[in-house]
Image (cartoon, rainbow, N blue to C red; front, side, top):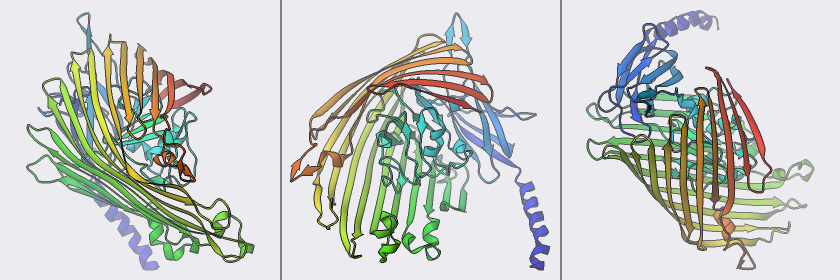
Length: 584
């Protein structure tokens, strides 16, 4: 022990020396047009809070590099002639990894031969330029600042106005709607619930996210009255994206904590190519500590994997291959002494295996000078295999339930966004989803072990969606959005049309008022449609669950570090409610 104490100052000296050698880092990234996605050349990017400031100019592809930026938090300001200036505040610059930014600029409007500039902060505006109300950009780095956030974006948004959750799971309740009505999207594709131990305590939620902050990029979160692009959602939308890996330098990360072992790697494929790779793998600490845990926790483990490969080309646009997946296992072992039974789980033998996966290939390409075309092909799978036995009064295990559900989805989506001058932008697309299902559920209503079949169905159906959304910049202070979404479900022939309308008024540089209204719908969980009694289906003709959203949002930027947002919203057949939020 004395020797260790003598070596401790030496260890601190070595750490201080290493820290002194890595006091600066590189910030790199791209600057693009927010509407068309085209690169913005010759934009000025400056670390604004440094004296003298560190700056750079973007090249013809919108790329920039800021070298020798001191570690810490910095403000990055971006400006370019013809665009509204943007300032990204408190970007965390660490010594171990380069910072990669994806910055989007909005075109400035010209009125009475003058350029009218409205200051914009990325954190307060959604990435989707079609959204005028009900949305906000979600920074993954911001999630790490919230106490108890566990780097989980779902737990972060519970601090937003009108959003609530519980400590036990990350199910999101948006203005009273059940978590199952939330839509999870990844790279523009709807995916199954991406949470470990999902659908256990609440449909739509889980224990913790399977999406590591090492790979997630900035994303959007919508709380209602969202644009027509989002169709199969009733309460809110998590529109998430994986960031591109560092295409200039290899970087590796290893972490060990209460959430598990986390290993990540990113870097370029070669020095002469702008393509990059990024992956992250996590393995649960609980599984590693199984010998130290109680008997009823044996076998509880989880693991997940996320990756993204980016392949830019000179003339054919950019291709990207992405994926996310998880595997969970949990269970309980019943006690044999009835005197020690306190809860239901004390008398149950249960084995639960869950899995989820999604993989997709995306293609983005510029068309002409004012259009951008996107297409994607993805496959998703989710499954639950559960078997439960419950002890009777004589401590004899009897069957309680058997669930074997597997859902495969094959999704093709494409969209074209075109900017017609500086005042009108339109995005139109279609989405075709093939739903392959294999549902089997049995339950014993009484405690005699006699199982009754609730669902036993296998087959395939199709959900077809088409939508269009336009945003009109009427003046420097007024914007209006109009959209229409159509859906058709081939299982029972149900279809629906959902119009969306929104208006935003920038009353002053620090005040804005937005009003949005729209019809929304969502399919129920597939096993609902196949529930039967005595072999007779009960819900085969079930229609979409529908709601009408009416949202009014007042946003007041009190000062640089304080914002007040008031969002009253009304849904059909639901009492209006008002939520307040003050941000610091």
